[in-house]
Amino acid sequence: MTTKLLTALLLGTSILGSAGVAYAADVTLNIESWRGDDLAIWKDKLIPAFEAKNPGIKVVFAPSAPTEYDAALGAKLAAGSAGDLITCRPFDKSLELYKKGNLADLSSLPGMENFSDVAKAAWQTDDGKASFCVPMASVIHGFIYNKDAFDKLGIKVPETRDEFFAALDKIKADGTYIPMAMGTKDLWEAATMGYQNIGPNYWKGEEGRAALIKGEQKLTDKDWVAPYEELAKWKPYLGDGFEAQTYPDSQNLFTLGRAAIYPAGSWEIGLFNTQAQFKMGAFPPPVEKAGDTCYISDHTDIGMGLNAASKNADAAKTFLSWVASPDFAAIYANALPGFFSLNNTPVKMEDPLAQEFVSWRGKCKSTIRSTYQILSRGTPNLENETWVESANVINGTDTPEAAAKKLQDGLDSWYKPAK
Image 1 (cartoon, rainbow, N blue to C red):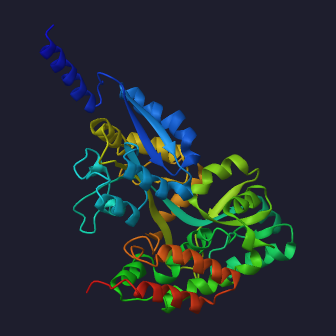
Image 2 (image 1 turned 90 degrees about the vertical axis):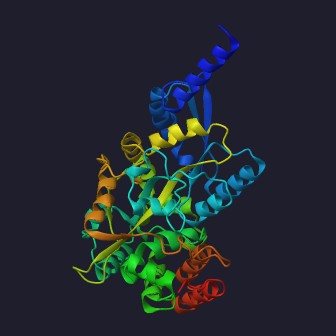
Image 3 (image 1 turned 60 degrees about the vertical axis):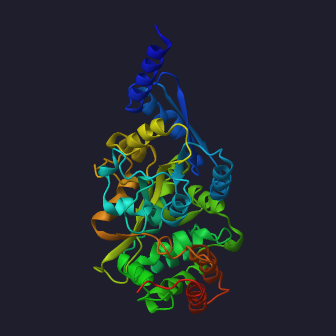
């Protein structure tokens, strides 16, 4: 066989491989991620399912610590040592990577047609002309509760704010349980599971979020201050020493059965299922009065993109098309209950707690976290400042009005709404 013929045959095999048939030599793809908790699921379920259908492509899931991910990824990209596949945070963090040339345009990737415009919006340019990450999942906010504790104390699942605080009062008066497990030491919990959890019912979800971006509303308006007024009322129910309580501390308090309610993101479901020895339920953020329209933070949370500098772009695109498939959606959503598929093909959820969370989509209006799109691109960063002020309000070191004014002043210092 001539050298030219052999080369042609090898090239032909490689080209076939990019369509998912076989590669002449094994290609190894490395995935960058902040989700270390998912390592076993990728290793035992997702990667084997892909590799079985794509001989010649090997995949390695290599996560960093969540708090270190952005800095570590930035350093690797700058040094040329980042993995082929980049797990994408929603909106501005990933848009910044795309604008720097770190993420490839995936607009024409086979499989992108499986997602709605809303699902893709978290990983698109502002004009929607370029998509740079495949949408993977959203997370939903609400409250997880200890069903055994509620049954023991005769508490009905609250639907209104009055019922919610009546339940907290009853739990506190009994003394067996801390009413709510949440600390303020790590800051982000106070904003993510506090302000962004209950806030959409006040600012009417997307209506308020869009008005804030357009400059038609301000953070000092009543609908944005009111959630802080509610948060300030949480302080007596968080237990002694909550100011020094970390996120893992809060998780442990709840799963050990020492707290009755946990202000939650649905991402907790998988971990809580393995640790809690009691029955759990969930309820959405209570509304002002029965029958009011409810709003939930159904936040587009995680996607996956292609490192524009990858030397294995064809194989990486094969993998990303699989991530965009209904097959991936079904495995991922059930392996990680609480991470809800963004694929147009409905996924049947097996986990009852996950079923409860996702059922709220049918009765409440969905929105995303108010700080994530456009409003955290400058300095001071509105997302990070919201962490600080949410903790300050709960701790009682700032009034709701003072916190709102600090946030709006910071935003005004750099953000001018487009007219």
